[in-house]
Image (cartoon, rainbow, N blue to C red; front, side):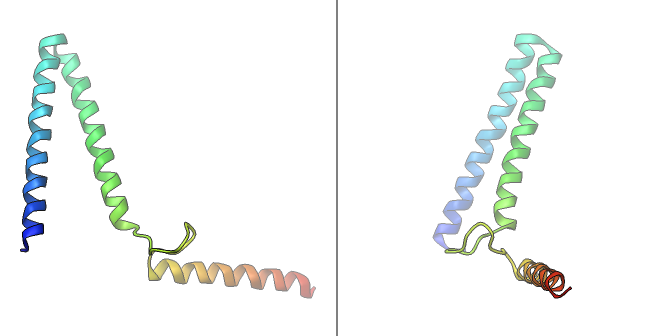
Length: 100
């Protein structure tokens, strides 16, 4: 493991601990402020925030865009081939209509 990777791992662990502690404190404050119903609301908001964060992070990893290509560019070989087949099908359908 290089120095940069180790530093990134330590940073991720630190911020993970900060999130866990702040979530626990939010639940305690929610209980003291409004009882069990507030704890459920705080937990629901925390869950939605974590789901949004994880979804955004994994979507960015699953759909990397090659640099220099527009939003219509295929992000992987499989999608590029599928896009070519669709374009071929669309052009052959147009040619068939003209030939009639």
